[in-house]
Structure formats: structure tokens, C-alpha cells
Image (cartoon, rainbow, N blue to C red; front, top):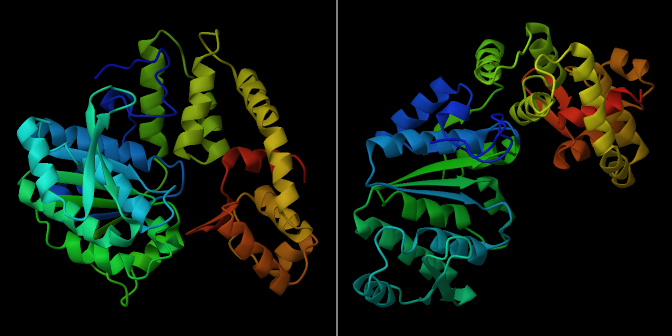
Length: 376
């Protein structure tokens, strides 16, 4: 698979293993689980590279099993069970076989709760199938989709991204409904991925929930320094450019190895005309990026209280805060009492301005953190 971009540091999409950094252990772990009938729960902060990892896993499994079918669904924008069923149906129907007349006839006779509609894909122009169904019969349609998958006999791999979104659906019992169908489709293997850790944990870690102990878990951390440095240096070297050690070190430290921000900085650095970028050029580049985003960051303040802004600045200045209610931290940044901090912190986490990691609390957006540090 060759890159279609002149810049090897991708910030969107997947173009093969040559442009995908490391994750060898994670890829091997996911492949082993899926090929041995274990579904996966993949939990990762936003922009840490979980979608790329999923595509990388699918790439390698497909090399081994070309007859299998692979589906990636991002359900973040779905608001209810009807929209979930519609997206799932659009993704899988007609993809397990060619859309011949006999196949179409089979589809029409198979689905009783809805009507398959034949159309053309907006991008490829190829025939596609959507479902015209009654919202009140969404559960029946969902059951028919799973039966269709099961009876196809095709080995299927389905990744459902932002899976925690099902908790926002107004319908009751969606988790139990999905679990009841999934456990009876042995030819279909699932990756349930999500970026909201506390919600994903409540779905898969709570003994009272249907998905409890139904999957193998994987938490995605930043790519380690050394393999990322070797990956970046190789891509620079191959194109007669030089990435000095101190430059890469500065990039990695400034965004704490967070994948998308790493890729974005490397992408911008690579695009400079200089064959050997200097540390001064890197600092100028970072300031340019921050200036480009400054208006957006300023608008964030319109939606935050003064307590939330003050706490966000303090966390950014510290880079990581372990004891958020400590007297030392409160006094240093002239914050209000612990109760006010906890209220502000809860809101910042819910709004995804702050992320709770194992080591402590950090500002989620790494570029926003750099901008905030300049305000303190």
C-alpha cells in the first residue's frame, strides 16, 4: 500500500504499515484475540491513534484471510437505537457477497421488519444497500441484521468506535440487547473502542452490566520514545531530510508523545523547505500553530466559569497534577477550596478539557496546554 500523500506523516486516515508507527505489541495482541474468538475492548484518549491501530490490525488480518469481511463504524454521531441500526445496516448489508439479482432477492425476502433500498454509494458509485424501516421496529431489524451476519457464514470483523455513545440512547436495555445477539454470532468478532474512559469502564467493568467480563481489555498509552524516534528519523532519512535528536526530543516532550499532536508537528516540520530544521525553527512553528488556534481557545473561555478557567490554567502550568486538592497546589495558584475545585474539575472532565491519567490530571488538548501555560 503506497502513500498518496507527499508528506509521510499522516494526520488522518491509514495508508499501510509503512506510515504507521510501532504499536507492534498492541497489533499482535488484538490479532491474537480476534483470531481466537475473543472480542476486544479498546480504551484510549482521543487522538491517541486507536482508529489507526484498528485499521492496522484489519490490514494484517486481511493479508492472512482475504475472504473475511471488515467493517469500521464510528457511532459518535448516533443519537438513538434507530440511528445505530441504520448505520450498522448500511455498513454490512450487501458487503458479504456481490449484489447480484439473486442476492438482492434474498435480502428482500430475509428482512421482514424493514425494506432494503438499493442505491449508489456517493463516493464510489457502486451499488449499496440501506434500510427503510420503522423506528418502533428497530429491535427487530437489529435482530435480523445479526441473523444475516450469522447465516452468511462469512468470517466478519466489526469495530464499533466511540461505543460509549450507546449510553446516551433514550431506549432502555440497549447493552443487553446487543450482548444477547453478539454472543450467538460466533463468526463475527468485535472491537468495542471508546475515548471516554469512565463510561467505557462502566459498560465493561461493572458486574451488573451485560458486557461484564465479555471482552479482552486493552488500554492505549502513548507510543514509547525510542520507536517513535526511529520511525520519524527513518521517514526523514528516506527523503533526504535530517531530523536531529534534540528536535525530536523537544517535540515528544512538548506534547508528551500524544500521537496526533506528534504527527501534526512532524507533518508541519517535514513540510518546511529546510533540509535540516533547527530548534529555533521548531519553536517558531509551535508558536505559529498556537496562534492559528488562539481564537478557538479564546472562545472556549465563554463556556467556562472563572473557577474552571483558573483551575485549567493551573493544571496546564503544572503539566500534570497528582494531588489536585493539596494545600500546596491550592495556595500556589490561589485557588478556592477543595469543594469548589472538585466541582470545577468534574465539569472540565465532562467537557473533555481535562483528562485523568494514572499519574494525575492533564489538559486534554496538548496545544491548548501550551497556550494556557503562556497565560499563567
